[in-house]
Length: 352
Image (cartoon, rainbow, N blue to C red; front, top):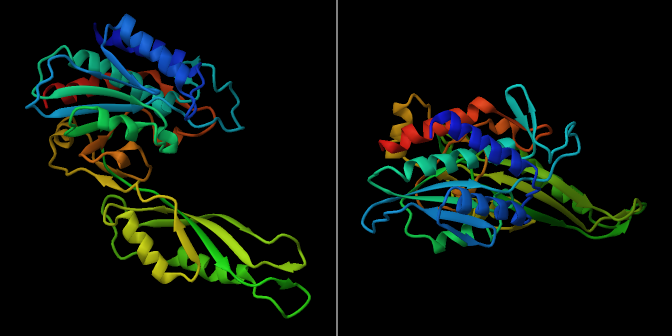
């Protein structure tokens, strides 16, 4: 098949996917559709676990390194400001609008086509395509559940909207639930110890603290207080104040390390929801990165999180579309971006 045929086929699949609601943990119907297409139309040997799908290219060799191609099938829930129907693929000129068109449908269909092309060629590595679920919520039934079921993986190319530029590092995520304690009392009296006032001091620390290790690719660790709750009625001094902190780590810190350092600095009680989503990076000397550079691509550091955080092997994030369109109203992908992605993936990987 030529690139025009591959692109048209990819766009047809993408438009159909848009019209199947597939928010995180509700991907079953979309997985059913893709499994049918891959198995019956493309004659691929498809494996399935929950809503995750994967294929291993024929001719797997135990002694060869294995490359994983990965994209996710799920989407976030549509925001209320959509002017178009988010679950209808709308083509206007060179754009296709619809929920998940940019994040991550374009990467999914582009990698699917690239896998079909590459699996018919001789390569010095094994090739696996994984379409994973629950990426948008870092769910336990997504890639984390599937990776132990796959052969040993040596490296991965993760399809996410990066303008087809290689993200060689991405920030991690740690969510903290912080509680300040005081003592209740009548607001008209001098009795009581206002928990909000204790929280203010710690919130100010989160707002102004500068971490010493700053990454050349990802910049500093970023901490943002995003939710705050306290009090039950206007005339009662609150005895607790809880707030949530979104921590975006760089590759110079592990999340657990940051947690212990934070606990030493604030007076409030701090609990981390998880330490599992650490920052990730790949050496610029890695063959995946070098192939991208030889194609004129520019490595960069990405502030957004992906399933790379759950991969214990080197991974590169690169895909069609722009991160700035993700999770927004009237999300879209350019037709030419899908065509370019298929061509670039094949050129990049067939000679690696």
